[in-house]
Length: 242
Image (cartoon, rainbow, N blue to C red; front, side, top):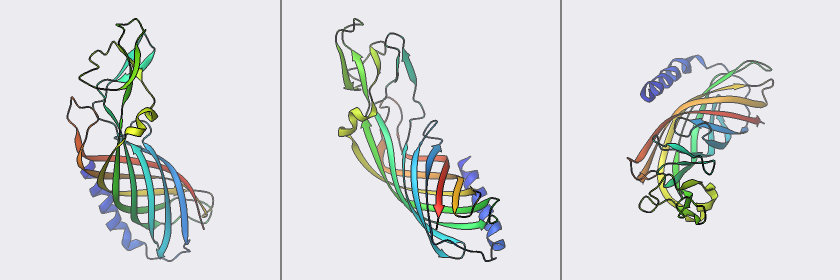
């Protein structure tokens, strides 16, 4: 699926580029921000901000920053009826990826002055900073009596009973113990911008991303973990041009 998406985007770009030679007014820069949904991040992946600068007719360069959560494909969310809370079985680390990036954006079709859709093709690369934050749980050492409940980082050799796991703690609990990991990423996509006026930006961006870290990102130690991640993503954004 991912390979087919990349091929489709690349072929679309090659077919449309020759037809975009007409001139139009360009803006010097634009700022946009929004939310990210991706195939590795669940319902809501993260958020991003991006700033673009005019290079030449229909071509922009941009820099941006994206922060997303990456989830293990085998995460199993369990419910403890005694505490009324949830936890993820066997999870040892939250994984967040911070992605500064630089790229180019080409305007394929411009919208009319006060209506229509603008279509852009874009690509970007950059470093990745992987944050592994210990996953804290509330564990009952009192054999279900509730008189010895401790909040601790999950340890598969220590926390053996799912029945005694009352729930997970806030992600901020383990923030001070974050393990930093380096990697790189690249993405290819197309955006579709709407808006009543040319100065405003409202749109979606659909694309494919690949990310590689220099070590496995261990989220659930009892199963296979990975250093390379691929995903299909959807960005929903808003912004302004000037």
